[in-house]
Each structure stands twice: as structure tokens, then as C-alpha cells.
Amino acid sequence: MDSLTLARTIHLIGVILWIGGVAMVTTVLIPAIKRFNSKEEKIETFEKIEGRFAIQARVTTLLTGATGFYMLYELDAWERYLDYRFWWIHGMTLIWVLFTVMLFILEPFVLHKKFKTRAEKAPERTFRIMHRLHWVLLILSLIVAAAGVAGSHGLFFIK
Ligand code: HEM
Image (cartoon, rainbow, N blue to C red; front, side, top):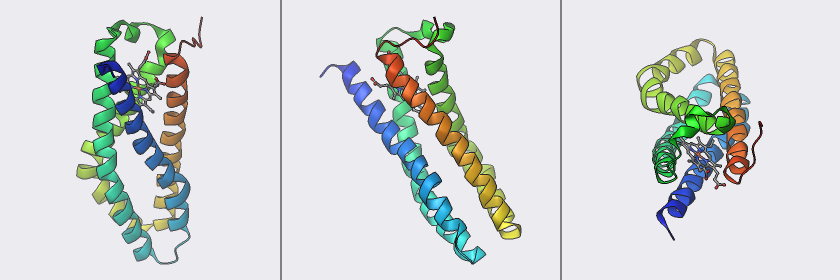
């Protein structure tokens, strides 16, 4: 297996574990937690499960980003950033930047504390907002992943 194929394989495994996890949190975990009666149970369960997933998300984000940039280097395809027809490359990079900032800066230094204070005061509203945010990130990630597969196999969406 050549290094480009290896990078592509690791890239995809990274995406599956990362975006698959986001899908699980969005469609299974948060809806189940929203049905809990007690506020304490809601916060504790969410923090325990999402906390474990955050580690997986950090590792897979790093793997996906590293292999993505490596593929651009191997393909010598940096000029795609200057061509709007490769909007899915911009999309991948944007999703990656968004998650990197969230997972490595905002979550540990800002959001974690904020979530706890807000969830203590208004649990329903806090989980509703968080659920919406997860849906937005999941839908954007799925659009970019689907366009990435089609685009890497030669489909141009814009002439
Ligand atoms: C820094 C971030 C990223 C960079 C630089 C990057 C770069 C790349 C490159 C260069 C390719 C191969 C394109 C080709 O063969 O013509 C690719 C493929 C792909 N990427 Fe990314 N990517 C990044 C993040 C993401 C993210 C966040 C997702 C998912 C939401 C994603 C999903 C995919 C998929 C599904 C493929 C298609 C693989 C295939 O079918 O061969 N990538 N990416």
C-alpha cells in the first residue's frame, strides 16, 4: 500500500470514529438525557459520556487533520484552496478548524464551566441549545463528507 492510500484509509477511519461519535451523541445520547427527570442525573450522565467521547474526538480530529494535510502535500493539491469548485476541501478544513477550536480551546477553558453553571440554572434550555448546536455540526459534517467522497472521485458540483 502506498503512503497516499494509507493516509486516505486513516483519514476515513478518523472521520468514521469522529463524525460517527457526533451522530451518536446527537441522535441517541442527548435525546435520552433530555428525558431524565432529575437535573443532577442529566448533568452527571452527559459529562461522564461526553467526557469520554471528547478524548476519542480529540485523537481522531488530529489524525484526520494530519492525514488530510498529508494528502494535499502528496497530491500537490494546495492550489485547490484557490479554486471554488473544490468547495468541499474548504468545507473539510472549516469543519476541522471548528472542531479543533471547540475541542482544544473552547471546551476545556470556557464551555465546560459555562455548561455546568447554565445547566444548573436552566437544564431544559441548556440541553435544547446544545442539541441544536450538535445537529448543525452533524449536518454540516455529513454534507462535507458526502461531497468529499464524490469530489475525490471526480465529481464536479460546479462547472
Ligand atoms: C484539515 C482538514 C482536512 C483536510 C486538509 C482534508 C483533505 C482531504 C483530501 C486532500 C482528500 C483527498 C482528495 C482527493 O483524493 O482528491 C480528502 C478526502 C476525504 N475527506 Fe478530508 N480533509 C480534512 C478533513 C475532513 C473532514 C472533517 C471530513 C469529514 C467531515 C473529511 C472527509 C473526507 C472524505 C469522506 C474523503 C473522501 C475519501 C475517499 O473517498 O477517497 N475530511 N480529504
